[in-house]
Image (tube, rainbow, N blue to C red; front, side, top):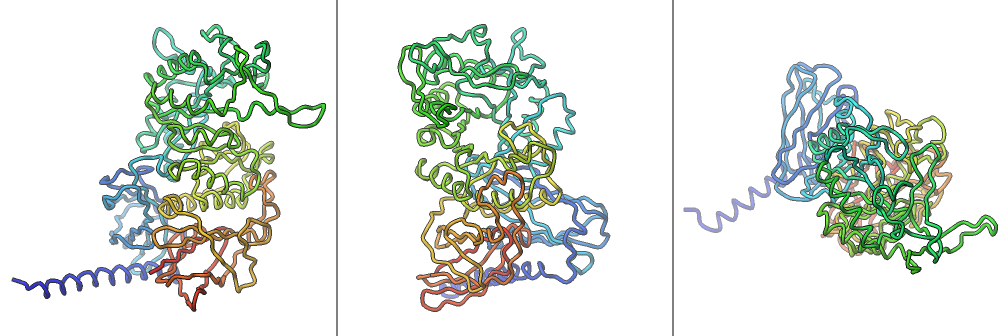
Length: 608
């Protein structure tokens, strides 16, 4: 029998060996980033996972494709949570160009991982790629929202290619944009069965089979499928569908002029608006939505609105004037006050997931109190980079720190009036701000969003930008527990001894920093606007320049507590892998050097 003292010593030694081994493996993987034999991207073609996210206890299947076969090679695999190594292995390559393997993550919900993959040819490390893994049982904990907008007749293999691409970005929810026939009758029926085809609001053909296949393929990747529809819209034929005019919204107290949202003349109809608080309208629309969910396995309703309808531009005065809306009884309708009860009643009637668009934040405070899965803001009146962060911060406050934010923020808006390419610096700076602030960006679908009309495909994503975006989405998944999991903003004093301007505000010619805190860690974000020519995130004409790479950036941080460790990670370096940093602490001054800064770095300071 082992005496208690000896037993304790054995335990301590075992733990020490585990810790030392983990540190050694972590340092070893870090050294591999700089291997002299590394030829980044030369050998590995692509890597993917079989799902967008995983329930705890579910194995992850990885697939890796090589540009050419390696007959004597292996994969060094390091599975990390933040900067901690949780598992490592080496797998011999087969003689084929594609291989798969499995990994079972720890049984811990709502956790992000980064998997580092190093390819060896013989004894030499020749290539490196990373991929993130999200273990989350509820998609709305860390929503990564994408979209679909084309539902004409599409071969299933082409639909599969769209879903596979979105899966590589870990998109876990899809908005099915304008899939419906008419807003007041989204799913047309024939002989008590869904019609095989119909035309959307823009008179584009929609095939039922395409919609069904996309839902099926999304579910196979553990993505949620959200049915898009307005909460108060109908076509000009609304009375033929059984909608009563007395349920409408009017521009006058006499109920003579119904509020109408105009659309292009070639489209099916303008949108005639109805009072969301009208019980009869709710009953009618909820029955139509029930029909949708009975026949199509959508997971929820993406509810849309049209912003503040009481603000009207007067061309005579050249000013925006207040013009209230009325119901048929002559009562003023405050639209923002109608959204919460509408969603509450819809939830009770339908029992599905809900998201409600707050156009320019209109009604968001009330929406945040309703049973939505996360908050969604279509940003129009918030033109600056700093505005995006403020929206995310405000939404977190409105929801008492419970609901995540997804931003619809359309890039290169004016450039998309003609054919061209997305401007990578504009896209990446906007994503850096949104992701660092703890939000998500709905931008990826069959293409990428440049306009509020999702089918627009004027601009193409270059191969280089596509690869950069993959790294950004890997980054936001791998570090979601620091970026999006309850970290609180704290005051910090950050300066640079490298003659690089540092600012606590987003401004041209400076690196913008802000700091968040969680679990005895401070996360300092550095976003590089030193070469920026505008602080408007939309980058309307695609003219935002690429920031210059800054190397060996010396930083001084005020740190009143004793620091135990400092590390950094960036989607712009080493595919997002962590790098431990040397530091010096004298009194309340912490000095360190970031190896580089391109668009966005996160520096993590751990306290004892």
